[in-house]
Figure (cartoon, rainbow over the protein chains, first blue to last red):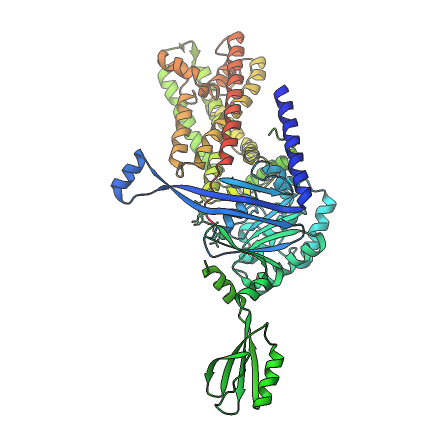
Amino acid sequence: MLWEKYKSTMKITVNEKCSSAYRKSDHMIQVKNLKKNYVIAKKEKGLGGAIKSLVKSEKQTIEAVKDISFQIAKGEIVAFLGPNGAGKSTTVKMMSGILTPTSGKIFINGKEPYQNRKEVVKDLGVVFGQRTQLNWDLRLGESFELLRHVYQIDKETYEQNLQVMDNILGISEIIDIPVRQLSLGQRMRGDLVAAMLHSPSVLFLDEPTIGLDVDGKYAIRKFIKEINRVKGTTVILTTHDLGDVQELCKRLIIINHGTIIEDGPLEELVERIAPYKDLVVEFYDEEAVEHPKAQLHKQKGNVAKYRFQKADITAAQLIQEISEKKSIKDVAIEEVTIDDIIRIAYHRE
Amino acid sequence: MCNGLAVNWRAFFYVYKTRIQKTLAYRFDVYGNIIWQCIVMFATAYFWKALYTGYDTVKGVQVEDMMTYTIVSSMMSLFFITFVEQRVIQSVEKGTVATDMLKPIPLFGIYFFEDLGYTTSLIVQNVIPIFIIGSIFIGVPVPHSTFMLLLFIPSVIMAYMINWLFAACFSTWAFTAINMNPMVQVKKHLIRLLSGCIIPMWFFPEWLSDILNVLPFVYIYQLPLDIYIGKYEMGILLQKMGIQALWLLVLWCLFVYLQKRVTKHVLVQGG
Ligand SMILES: Nc1ncnc2c1ncn2[C@@H]1O[C@H](COP(=O)(O)OP(=O)(O)OP(=O)(O)O)[C@@H](O)[C@H]1O
Ligand SMILES: [Mg+2]
């Protein structure tokens, strides 16, 4: 009894310390030197290997997340990018209290998820695009009802939240369908609603648009934007669809081989990786003109492609100066696509 | 459990309620269960009858008590069904532990109330039918006395809990060993054999029953059945119920410990 009391007072002081540290920095999410190793039994081939592994199995360590630190302020929408196997999902699982980090610390709202899992997840919404948290055996509505009880949401707030989300995601038409009969897109919408029913202040989305059609993606992006605007929800989103990033995120964190390689606004990254644009000009003959601030990058027939640094000259200026020298039939400006930029970022070590 | 959060009974009750509704709505394996258990019950009853030919009592037990024993034990086997192992194995294999852990309630709390809901519907669907069938074809299983019946009820509840906690502790293995489906089957049949479910302790050789009496299994079937047929005096039965309660406590502590340990080392399969 005394021990219990002692322990609980201990806990309170620890929590207070954390939360005061949190208040000072005013970050919703803090991740410090996070590391996760997966230890797996190394399987040897053949019967001999199988017998050997019965006696003594060799362990292999995979460093999924090596040393990650970042901070996210309240109300931010941050994209978490990286190639397959970079460690994104592992990080999200640690932040949602499912996996315990090998070392390092995470604070969500001042609390550590792997230590107070139940406390932290109360204020957390999570969607894993690859799996559902809806109950396979229940109808969608019953699944929500179960969550209403789990999160102890009062009926009025619940109806209201459902109404708001229905407006964007069109849930009411599928609410009576058993979860196992939902299509991927319908299920994903259901999962998003399930994650937001209890109005959490933090939302983790691990590939929320995977496998969705254009309308599905549009609805989900609109939904994320809307809850972020209205409720100030902090969102972390991992995705391979860069449209999501362009639509939603001001900031992106790129991770590769378990370490962060970029952290900043999208425009800054674009500036750094591709500080240039291409101007494609069509002349009336095959003779292209030179310009001191643009490099003649490619030429084919009447069409010439100039590459110029955005800092040096504007496109309008360049067009004007070229047309003063020689008459122009047509122009087009080509920017490096975000896909290219991200690909370059992934491959840069 | 001791983290300052009040237990969320309403969520558990909802889990319990929906599980009952679902089980009553889809009456899939109901008849299979009853038919199988009927076969076991009749076979056992005729086996005992054959054994008793020429004797009034064997080891101080009359043939009528033996019939009662058989029917009540069949009812209990239908009632003591646990799905927690299957549930844990599946959620580890498919990686759905991840989503189970996103809910702010104890992981095994949901599993327990699902099982309890299932058990409750089984009372209607299986236990009562088998009672009626047994009563008609073998004989009404009358308890030794009203008082014994009153004692039987708490003892069966404790037995249910011991059985469930044992299954839950066992299931935590699934977090580390991947394929444990065969082990679940072995465990299930071993418990039936070692708990007096099929053969009462008093037919075992003394050295074996002495060993088994130290293990928790006899407190799942044998003790409640002993109480029902009034095999021992009140004093001895109460004493045994004390040991039963003690086992319940031990398993509870083990369960709390294992559950804590296991959730710290959870592995999630798949991205
Ligand atoms: N349960 C596991 N056991 C062993 N290794 C794992 C496990 N889960 C992930 N890994 C390994 O950890 C690394 C990171 O995986 P993670 O799922 O975090 O990648 P990701 O960035 O989400 O990739 P993707 O974009 O493909 O989803 C990978 O090398 C993967 O093989
Ligand atoms: Mg992933």
